[in-house]
Length: 100
Image: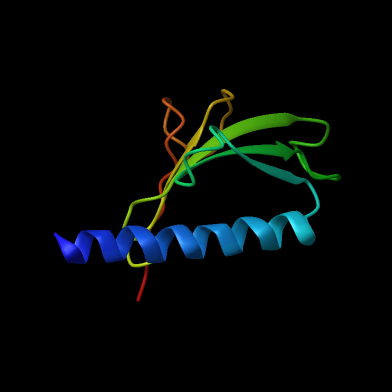
């Protein structure tokens, strides 16, 4: 059980540092906020369609749910806005293939 507590503490610290970095130096076309200020593991993402693409002018909402053993396990990413893309399932879940 102590191992689980260690994962939670280290993953929360890592996520806080990443959130601070994104707030200090935002990525163009993205806005990241917490779904609930008391939950560092659930992020809301606003994506603004990039110029000169089929998504230009679009506004897309998504959620990122991080596991307690992050960064050792990947987060789940799900679009809340309906959109078409070959790597996005109908329910908004993004297919993420990790290659080694």
